Image (cartoon, rainbow, N blue to C red):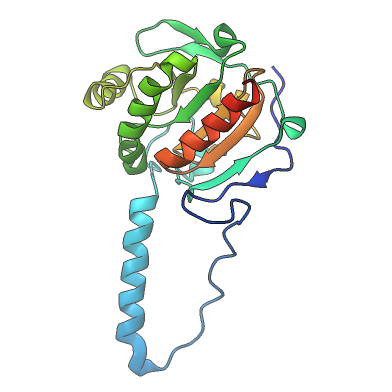
Length: 231
């Protein structure tokens, strides 16, 4: 299988913005030296930033899973969204693997349908935060022929299935501790970013990608846009 490479993309901002083409600007500028008397304020800011980073990041550096690239561990994205026009999409993407019951699953079985891929593992806070919305959306879109498929590169069957029971997950996930499934998504899903959500159109082409926790309204918009292409 040939690896998928990213194409020029148009950014999709989080739901609620007035200009859907707007993108998040660059991060803060370099740190400057503050007068000594302002140290308490700086310390408070650093504590707040550390707390935010803890909530946004899924770190499993101590684990030896396939996602631990060069010992960096997992780092969740910032929720950035990209979507591609039909003519700019790369693919098709086709992934195959065994779910946590040992059953083989393949996106080839869903040819012609929209597919939503989601990377996750049980100990990842953003994964747990988005799980209820993914469950609801998977159920809501079932009649529209939209299929959801998880990819888990960290957990054993007992851990993964406990997560799925907790959140009443209605769709399967592939066990990918050897990283073969993620390798098939090279260029689409950054190996360190968990969770990441990818929307495939009916041709298996990459229509959209969300790096980090996906908002329900954002994913609804992305899926609805792809469904509308065939309407």
